[in-house]
Image (cartoon, rainbow, N blue to C red; front, side, top):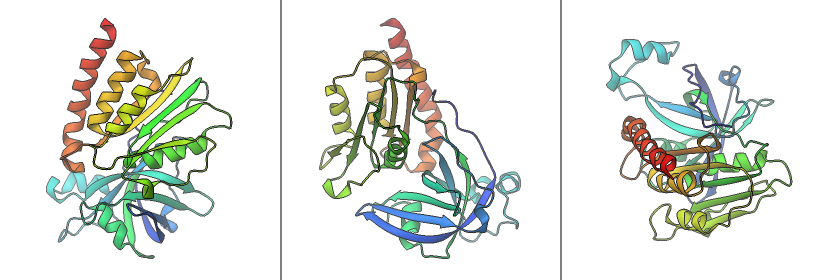
Length: 281
């Protein structure tokens, strides 16, 4: 399945916190529910995501809340701030949406909210978007990411049929950040320690003895190591573009607002450079 542009949706959903759970020292789970999810649905993409909406303090938004109207009528600096999170699970029978948040103390916007969230708290979001699901016609699968990609990798592994060949590498801070994933695939957990984000992932994929046949790859996380691995797969291993789902979820030194503004140009430049090398190889 090709890494195609995500489906855009401005439908706003309003949910309430049902429960929370601390999964690891740096991962907080929030389960959302309520009647406001009656029209929400997540399909077969295992990287489905939603964009959480955090209102600007002191700004009164019209009711019923309508993001399209807000974008048309309010100055940009008064638009709710958006943060993107992967759908870890969607239970349509109970109308419960599970999101996992990486926690770095009081840094950021969404993670501190998740730490303070209590049952009954309200959260608005738009979506879902999504573009990837493991292609069952591939001979084998490669899934690589840091903590930000862990929810999508876990969901993808849980969607794989039994007996499928897959290699999964997940980099986390240390052994205390490992999670149980309901899959027959053995995850290789790489402990970052004091090394730069992604260094261990690049080393692990470089050292991998690639199986024969067509690979379908999912590589997401910090943009720097994602760029390196995209080049490794696309140029050195000649993996076709349509068999790659590769994107920088975040970038060191940027918050999501800054990274979102620069991401399209960054991706276009990287792709142009690497595609030129791939064609010349």
